[in-house]
Image (cartoon, rainbow, N blue to C red; front, side, top):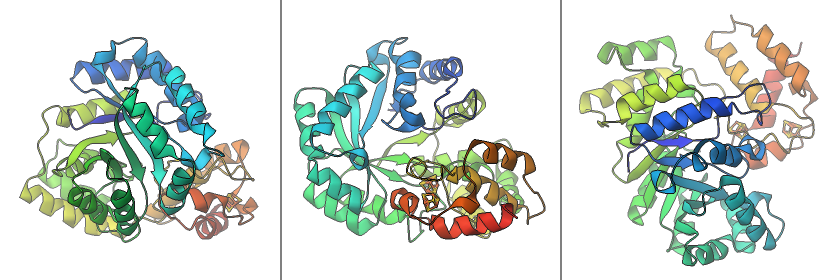
Length: 368
Ligand code: SF4
Ligand code: SF4
């Protein structure tokens, strides 16, 4: 399998509404992806407010032969209320995607709390039964917690085939995300790894000037995002790297260096770690834009959109005030100043961001 997967969490949109996906553009992107020999698509029950699976059906399952693609989908234990939800969600997913079966199936976003829910609702046992029926070919889980928690899960779930981890060069030695330690835990247990967030929600495609200069000095023709994808894909146990591609330009860029993939050389790794030192000074809120936090917000605050604007504001030393972006957000959702510190968002944040604290800073910057 080629080491680039099409993540369908950030598909092109026709409006601000996450459900309003530009299906025509996704069809063109999927065709281009398949034409170039790539096969792996990754979706989930809750991406794009539930539309991502249906978009996959329209763009891929109804337009391409089953043997042309591989599909990964996920069981959201964090949305479940009973064991019976396994069968309900799984049959909805089969219907929504039109794929007939899942090549890869994951218990979604495990951390200590979600693993307890998955255990209580017997998600693994349910998925094993579907595997025995041929409806799942490979069973795994996606993971957002410490290496110690991962060690516990892999010791208890010896039969899983693979693990999906957040790996990127910014989080490699980060003590909250623990990319390196988690990767090494998977290697120790002989599990293959699928990488998510290699570009950290787009953050590593848009670097501070000094960091970009270091990378461009060595490879002027290559995008800065290419360094992040190649870093993750170069790890030996990595099966594929998911890129949440939002337009054709991103897809063509990814294809250009992943079609005939070449890992980073020692000289390139040296440049990347120099650039990393520059980047560390600039990341304010390490939000990846996954939107796991938004559904439960009683004030309907578009949390990641405010964090994206706030990061830009800080990156340019508070010289650029995002008036237009802010007006759009204020018209379409709650304001950071409305936050009541209920903590619903923090419970779902895979990056363990102290959202309440950060939201206060955003409010004091943008809600005067
Ligand atoms: S803590 Fe604030 S931002 Fe988070 S869910 Fe509650 S109201 Fe929304
Ligand atoms: S704050 Fe956390 S949960 Fe919300 S979008 Fe950012 S990374 Fe995802």
